Image (cartoon, rainbow, N blue to C red; front, side, top):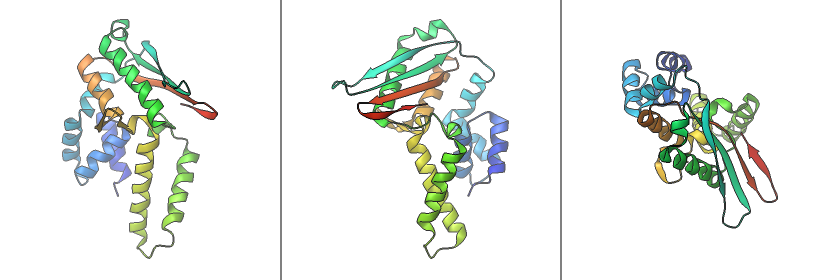
Length: 202
């Protein structure tokens, strides 16, 4: 299991996201220098540096309505300038993200936005699942963490595989757009409705 102190240290050094730092350290087997290189390969450092201490006062609201008119989504995508907000590529990306919300039904925006109570409840659920297994406690802990990571990737919009290209996550696409456009891009919030069901707001 990755040492969370190392994750915090790498995050402080680079400004990259917590999950990206954890993934980089896992790939590097805990080696800090190799983890830095992994982050560079993922484009996380470049994106983090570009977005540090910038404000997003512009952007747009994108909507998606399913053809049967029984399910829809709305998403606010922010950027730094009105020029970028009107850019065709930015608009198309915002529309794709609204479709992502409609299709993949995320519960949260990112791992950092998951309430601690929800995270702990899910952890306890996975602990109960492995409690009867005849395995060492250390192995059980790794299994639980693996299940928790998988669950996080499924319920968080930024960690979900992009529905048009499952080789990339939404977070990776955002970082690519940041590197290409040169402005900070942030998903501020989203909402999803389905007829007869409680809506998801994040």
